[in-house]
Image (tube, rainbow, N blue to C red; front, side, top):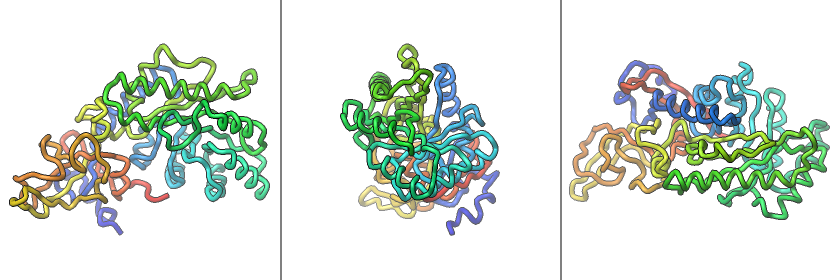
Amino acid sequence: MDFSLQNHESFIGRPATDLPTPSLVLSKPVLERNIKQLLQDVKELGISFRPHVKTLKSLEVVRMMLDNGTHRRIVASTLCEIRGALPLAEEGILDEALYGLPIYPSALPQLAALSSKVKIVLMVDNEAQIDALEAFAQSTGRATPWPVFIKVDVGSHRAGLESSSPALQLLVGKVEASAAAEVYGFYCHAGHSYACRTEEAAAAVLKSEVEGVVRAAAYLDRKEGRKVVVSFGSTPTAHVVNSLRRELPEGMEVELHAGNFPANDLQQVCTGLVAEEQQAVRVLAEVCSVYPERNEALINAGTVALTKEMSDVAGFGRVTDRPGWAVRVEEVFRVGQKVMLYIQHACITAAQHHVYYVADEGDVVRETWVPWKGW
């Protein structure tokens, strides 16, 4: 068992620098400000919001992102995340969970079981997935069609079909003709928005997201009164969602999704859309040894406690109060010194830690949150 799981509550009321190393420290005031800002943007635009729960996988953070029931849908990357969020469904503040991977057969029995506790929406981008849904319905006697988002590729080339692809039109037709599925809406994720470096660039990607899902929705037989959801977003484009004020599509339910925004990280700072002080996640590490002859120091936080991902910022992390210090080289470290690090990618780093130590403005630990682990 991880050491932190045995004694994490004993650190409540103590300075974050007293924590065992490495530890993940969450600044709750920063977290709250980040969430409040995006929720305010969504409210002003009058659109729906579906937070992605992949980054800080805990009831406490999901409750905050849902604004305690103002918004009632999530998107999850793992079955574990859906199971972890079920207490919120039992409380009556969560109605729906989208399983955000294109569906595969072995996940269906678990999702069917979960659907008795919360509405489950699936993601599809291939006709064979509809065949799998039909085979599952035949083998289990399931009579209710699965609501499905059709995934649209707007430039990331990770999953989905481009809106101009003949395969997309064929897929829409196959879903429409199937008794095992029904079109809920069209979904895209602009992962390539992380390469943006200005608000203007992010706004251009956001515009392409909206245009992509709206074009895809045109393949749908829009029967009178039929609702269709167009869902788009990523944390960089969510930061500029206000740029849509005059360009929201009509006749559709518009939904924003984003996941990293409560936490932020060095990758987000590099987009130019996030200030350094908006980073809510840090890792406390300790210097194990120093090597003056090669101007290096060794800390007890490497790939597993941080990440191997990089950005425009040098190194695998950066000392918070020394802008020029990265997790690479420095001549003034001393053995036993504790260092607080900003991290490159919050989604990766948070997944490695068994406990989140939640600190106040004075960096005193006030709560401990245990995240969901695994798949």
